[in-house]
Amino acid sequence: MNIVIIGQGGHSKVIIDMIRINECFKIIAFLDDKFNDILSNEDIFYGPISAYKFLIDQYKDIKFIVAIGNNQIRKQIVESLNLEAFDYMTIVHPSAIISPSVMIGKGTLIMANTVINADTMIGDHVIINTGSIIEHDNKVNDFSHVSPNATLTGNVYIGEGVHIGACATLIPSVQVGAWSVIGAGAVVINSIPENRTAVGVPAKIKK
Image: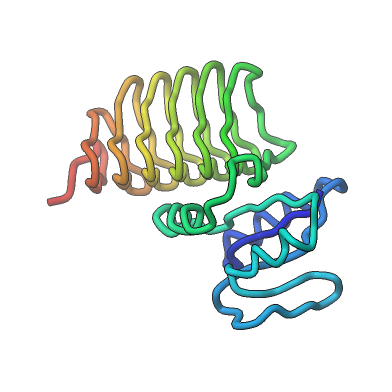
């Protein structure tokens, strides 16, 4: 399987390591708008994001990964590419523990040492980062990011584009509205509306 990585920042380094674990995957290109032209070095292409059309013409067996940690930018890129869902690669680190009843969307990245338990739904282009715990019956919507060592206890709802900070904990049945941010180390005991930032223990909405 030929893989194209879109974005060449720090987040992409972790994804590269995940891909190289699997010998069936081959990275053929890095696309980032810091490149002006399409270049080739050691059988790998480097070019602007718009070069994805060139790669589709060159390769039949090709999948894309948007390696951008920022949720809004990741969504903007996916919308601008306008590819089909099956054109995106979902990658799960082999050390992750995932229940057979879990559903995981396209373009989603499940990092090392994560645990995702029964009947949880993970949307498209989500990042479940290193060591995070997603308990049973949770729903994490598209373009969200659960940071390292965060914990979602049972029946938690995460809206589109939400960012859960490192080591944050969400107690059972809370809801976090779309595009809200939960600060690192926060303990969420009450639901958070859309487009808010909540920090602290217990988490309170910043004015």
